[in-house]
Length: 494
Image 1 (cartoon, one colour):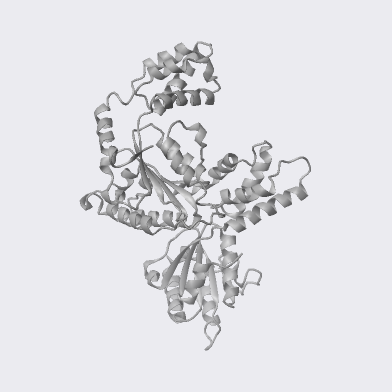
Image 2 (cartoon, rainbow, N blue to C red; image 1 turned 45 degrees about the vertical axis):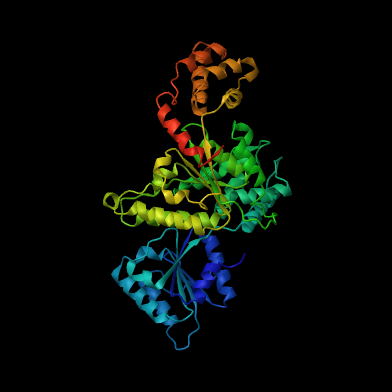
């Protein structure tokens, strides 16, 4: 494992303080140790439980657990004229800076080490720095194990299980381990070991399938809050979208490590259209087709009542995205998150959020593919639609006759019913004007009706349920017509 390049740059730039916000503390400490070795710097590690010691293996200095006494020790270490520069790593130290004396002593030390290679690193799981220290600090977000480290951890965990476990286990092949490592990027090393163990315990033939790996990862990742990890979907389980599927086929290998094309990787797509017609489901197909992990960013969840916290949440979420790239970033109903309100309504927060996000979209790393969905095109900011934000904008209309046949077959098969037993042609005629979601719900309701009658699902159950369903296209006919007119010359039919 190599050191942290950003930390290396900050130390060379003579920042006296670096705030390192890390998801995996042991991994971050290893990165810091590697960085110190690269710079030939001695380094010290402090925690309130163990005190101050040189490196991880050193003995704690006498009576150095309390923050004030620890700072006194550091003052002595850097006091001699010509003392060699050093790196001081302080675990969770931000929690003690609410003490006026601790803050004052710490600021005095920072003033003393300016313009030297001595650096303080506050290592924490969350950002909380007093305003007095911000002018002298740099902020570092990370601690995410690299894909190479993830693969090595997967391999080591499997080898350890082989040595210590008695009995037959389903182990992945050597070619699969690289794919597993790529899928698990974004978790800490202990979490990765937990996923590997969980897959082994599942004892099924699909234990190492992409779907199972994603399910295990989702259980862990979604606890963080700002980003949600989502399962992907195969194109066979989604009806229609022929133009979009063809577009994806041309770009299928764009994010592969083995792709040596001079073409830039695609930036993203905007999916607009009628509610319930499969936009969200198609995003999951997009991620699967591009072989990228799928993360969902809900812009509305970033908003907070506290001043500055909304912008901070967005910056943190986008920093996570940059660290986890390559990935597919799903932004659902983007018009709701970026619809700018007047400054008198929210103090200009929406406008700042939109500005920050649009700038990031323009400057983001090539490995992030954005898949955004929108229902209300009138609320989309004009800045979002300008050329270059997305590679293509696709319009998703109500499913046609051929698509409705496929949708019926897919959802019947998904619930254990043989589509060949039903008159799909007649059912297709009855579902004229239905969205895919309405067809799915009609099938589910018909299954409940058949279950209540203690009979197998039949055509009459489906016909009766479809007849009792009032599709969205009836009350919203004028809006859908206006949406089609707007999209005719601005988008590509999906």
